[in-house]
Amino acid sequence: MSDHISPTDTFEEVLDSGRSELSAARSEYDALEQTEEVPSALVEAISDLERELEELDQTLNVGDEDLKLARETVQRVGVLTDVFGALRERQRTIVEADISRIEHHVSGIVTLARDHDVDTHIPQDLETIERQNSMLAALVDKGRHEKVLTNDRVTPGEVDAAIRRVNAELTTQVSDGHRAETYESITEALLDKIHEMLGSLDEENPERTAFSSDLGFVKSLLESTDDTDDAGAAQTVHTALEGALMLHYAVARTLANQRVAVALADTVTDSELSVDCNVDQCVADGDAETLIGAITDAVDTEVELSTSERLRQLLNEHDGSVLRTAQATDFDVATILDHLEQLYNDGQIADLEVTFDQ
Image 1: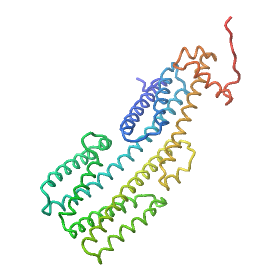
Image 2: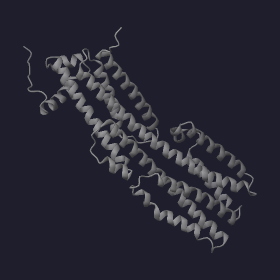
Image 3: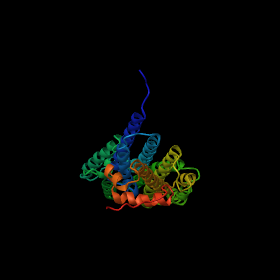
Image 4: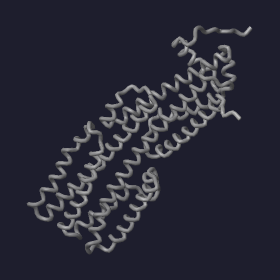
């Protein structure tokens, strides 16, 4: 019994893998579009590549050129999936950092409140905040990052606002000295996280040092409380805490972009995609947006080129007849004529002939 696989079987296997990849791309997009502004060209590429797979599926007599086109199409589908995957990684990085930052804030203020004799309604508020915070953390643990932002029960912003309200009430119920100690502890924990994220950036990324001034200011506030009374120290350290919270927010997004740039650079290398940008520089700068734009343009261009090539083959199979090609495929006459102009200009067809009805 022969183990030989026919070109048609290989062709079908390639198309099946393309459909599977395209389904994965759609799943990644579905998780993104609820919270992110996805470039429209990427969204359009899903439909374009789906149509291209459908057109290839109509091939009756599979030749080497058809198999080559199928493999090239599936490779582009893989690139698209990788782009959506990188954007999802950015989403995950940002969500995880935001939840981590809120957890530090919540943990510190909750401990401060419970360690002191506070107003009777605050304990109930704390229980609610802790429960909501746990819900968000559980979603992250389950990989449901998009649900952290879209669920209708609680959002990170609501938890953050709630813990700030509790903290405001504590200013009249907890001593300045104890509040200053708590604010300093939270700030130092956040600074450790910030330095850890900055250390994960590319060595040439200018953002590694862009936050130096603000970080220095926060640290100087922490060091300036020795010669002040407790009230002044509490206010100063609370200002430092607010600065650390804002820096953590900003640095997390910088790290997310760095990770996207690295992931997309790997995609360009692995797929040997020709992109109109300096990939290494984008990685060094953590410039995800330039890479996303360049890859999207490249995929879109290659889809157009592939469609034109497929039409050239179909026209050849139907003796150059636009009408017969349209009747035998999903291409309409207008689309074929649009591509004919490009094929003629590229020198891929030698002449155009018009036949009149008698």
